[in-house]
Length: 358
Length: 268
Ligand SMILES: Nc1ncnc2c1ncn2[C@@H]1O[C@H](COP(=O)(O)OP(=O)(O)OP(=O)(O)O)[C@@H](O)[C@H]1O
Ligand SMILES: [Mg+2]
Image (cartoon, rainbow over all chains, first blue to last red):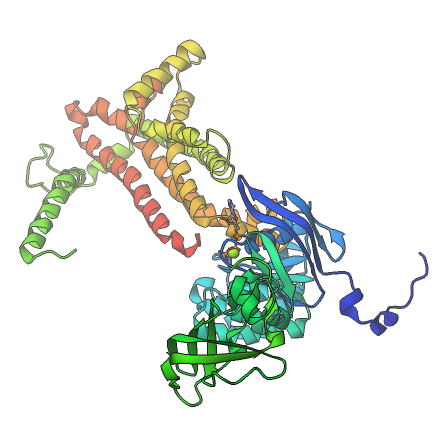
């Protein structure tokens, strides 16, 4: 065997940038008959990352996940796990585990048997698998539920069993397909922070599918935004929110204002399509006041005021054409603007160009 | 839907009448098998176990029972294997002609017994050159027994979907292990229900049997038919009829319990 540098040396390098990606997708494509579900996806997911796939219904998220797990064969392209091409491997030969949207717990086995299933089929001795299953159940706070049947559990408990059943195998990558989709809002918020905590503890790469933008923004290290079988943007929650690359991303992640055409030229002074987040815009009635340094200014008329408790939302029709939504903290109640005429200001860097159309 | 009181009463009476028409004659057969009065008039006379004892010692009746049980078990076994395999093939793999083939498998249960009987009789004797015997009756019974097994298994597979099998493979189990630990346990109660129904169907079949069973052999219903008009046999006929009723209804009852209970995931 050739001489190898001791492992310790690896610790000196920053892991994220140089390490082999946990999951690498290249030119991934999937057709179902004439339907193109996934239309050329390239993606690197780093080891230990909490990675979200966000996108509207039918955008291909589940199909990508199923190709990573091995349930679907790609029409074209490759799937690599830890640098190894697994595109042709069966699901049981891939070092990934899945938490299914409907949990897919085995109804004819109790909770403990469900959790130890993966160890059992890999031939782990009984005593060890019992112990590891008990540990896994403890880590999802279900210590005393081993003897129950899945049908005797609540939705949140089933979800945690599914999680324990996957994690007990200590996979390199855990795939989760809308694991919180079936839970009510309160439980969902609880599970979000639990899941995040768990991911930090076990140090496994999580690939998490959701169509809930808040969930993606609050939980993930990075997000891929899917649209019609393609990835529109990959980035941190901040990048995706503050600097959406396309009009689609701007509209899907958070609410967005788009200014284009003549309105953009008149207000921003450039041709193209621009996105501005509603909360970045200040609204007042000082029509005559000029723009401050580094500020963009536009005047218009309020067409609607929506009262939403903590915030107020103004719909403004600009004199230059186009419309903008503006939100403002409900600090002083609903203001009255003379004749509904308002001045809007925002910092230059808060309008940024996006591709796509209005 | 809500009914007025009168409507409800009328419906209840109709229900009671309907059930009475069906079950009263069967009850009479049952009572008569213990009736000490050989004229079997109404009301029944005293209680006796004599007919049951005589039936148990009647060679013809016993031989018929054995033939019926053998034919039923063998036909059920064939139906379980072929029906389950056909169900898997048609439910798990998409291919051209899937729907027509499904229909072809289910059709024998709807075909008139007399047609099936004559067709099989002809096929066995003149085309295949096989002498009629127990074996030919078993094959004939299997043609319609397969249907109930197939239907039960297809329904179960359809409801199960692929999710559990995918979960099993995801956790590292190959195809065979998945079948052994997940698919088969989930199918067990459907197979049992289908098998019970198949046995019941075979046990009380008459028409196809008369065309396919070898000379000198009799199944229970055929024995009854043959002995019905021999006055000295009448008491024993009642006993055998009760056995026939039980052998064909108890499995149906059990099968229904199993199918209704299957939501629990087939704990059997
Ligand atoms: N087995 C299949 N056969 C045919 N079409 C399919 C199949 N699976 C998915 N599709 C199609 O592929 C496209 C992408 O589906 P996919 O399930 O990946 O979307 P998704 O992003 O997960 O949506 P959702 O958020 O609703 O779960 C859809 O148009 C869908 O109808
Ligand atoms: Mg999906």
